Amino acid sequence: MQIARLQTMKESDQLRKEAAEDTSDNDQRDVGYLRKIERALKAEKFEEVYLPKLREKYTITGNYMKWTIETHDGIIVFYPKANSLYHKKYKIWIKPGLRWIIKNI
Image (cartoon, rainbow, N blue to C red; front, side, top):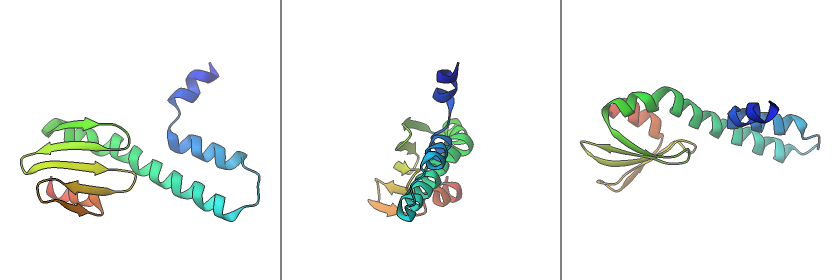
């Protein structure tokens, strides 16, 4: 029963649990955990809120780390953890990518 619960646990929750169990007195490690948790939350928010809306309009392929969106303006590759977007037609990087997606798509 506990194994099934751990499989459904989000990455940000797992990282929080790891950070709480880590008893070492290392500030740099704590900052690293915070950054990992922040990136995981960005990816989870994109998957839960924006991805279903985008799938209604466009063809989307990818996984947790990278999403490829085929739009009328070309192919866009979005990296939710880094909040970066690469527009293949214009060959440019856009950051913050999620704001650009909300504004232009």
